[in-house]
Length: 113
Image (cartoon, rainbow, N blue to C red; front, side, top):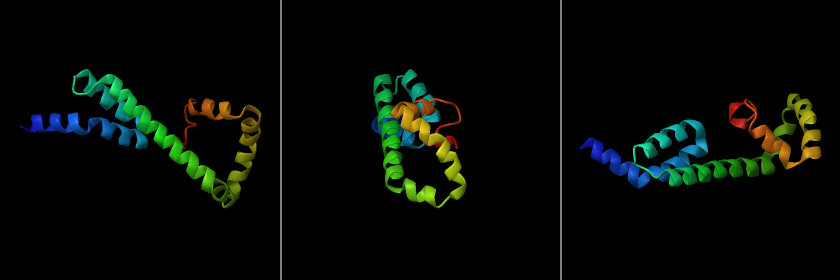
């Protein structure tokens, strides 16, 4: 009975749970979601879509938080200014590509810092 109830929960709320959970912690959730898709409880293409939506929402949320509050946040932390001064020329020179590149360098993503 418990197994049937869990299957019902996963089939009803699984994709929403994946989208919300990837907003917080993507890699661990994707392993879990992939296992559920492998067992046939969820559709792999829909798992990928839900995960992409959650990750996109995470990135956009923090982008706008940074855009609105970032300069004030940095100005209150003088020790960070030197580190930021080092990164700004890269961002000015390479634009968005520098931001995308840093996303894929281990240890450089914002949740790992």
